[in-house]
Image (cartoon, rainbow, N blue to C red; front, side):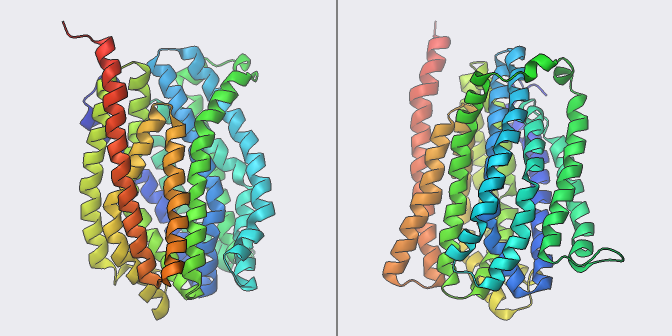
Length: 453
């Protein structure tokens, strides 16, 4: 598809739907993990929930790599600079491998400290480490997959990764019970089995993406010369990807604050909240798909100086996102009593999951503004703007909510109603700022390039 000429609403749908389906199966993958950890024990479910902010460092840096690669390669394609597109692709791979070494060290060294920081019992910490250690040892596979996939996304191919995620989900359904509970000569591995299942799925994903990328006409033209390390490309990748990685890591900070506060109620409250967030992740999938779409569209059109199309892409995406999340919020509210039962039979866990979802239903429509505004800035190669947005939402807001809740001696429900107030306030301010940025920067640039007769 031609990202520089085709109708914007049609392009957003064409790119977003495959990306959303892929992310759906990625989230269903996590739901399968949650389901099986609940079968092990409520403590295992709590351990998996608390491992999320730790494991999320892999997710955050992977997103930074793929967004940085998509943006830089996409801009080069829009500028018709094929040489730079090839250099960015090879250097994204090099950068991904280098960053994986760093992330593995950080994860293995600090995981236990973070579990303890969240007030975990020794049993919860041990169960959590069985999972996170496996994930960090295999983290290089995550980075290879997203590095290779950044080229496909930059060209507008979101279908290949979608297919890989569907296959990974199916593999996880098969591998999880075998590795957790044992089968024939395979011993029962418990929480370690959940992590190992993920690593096996990532290995297969890497092989499939590698095969697809090697068929790409651009890649066929790449010679060994493009793998000679050039500092300028690594520097550009770093400054494009690292701000967003650091910012998204702020989500781990937010989760740590939330789990710490919720954990003061009980570990069962943590389990209930952790299970409920899996549902929240599912309904946010269309927004993440739209976000993937607009980064590709905006990157190419910005590189080609098509500023009016950049502006249209943002506002179309916001309209779609708000409509989807209003309907999703209604659905979440109406099913809040039913859905948590897929993850646990413990009535206390179910009650806390239900209470969170009833509040989350009202927060959901605030999220499209946040995610899609970040996608807008990342497509413009302004990842520092996205970093500021993320740091405000994922660090400043959680700190404010945490200490305000402590000051008010807020209970479980009041804590999340405070979260509701802060999230909506931030999203409204962000939309106002992006609208101002478009008027002052893009509209002005468009007028300069296309003066009225």
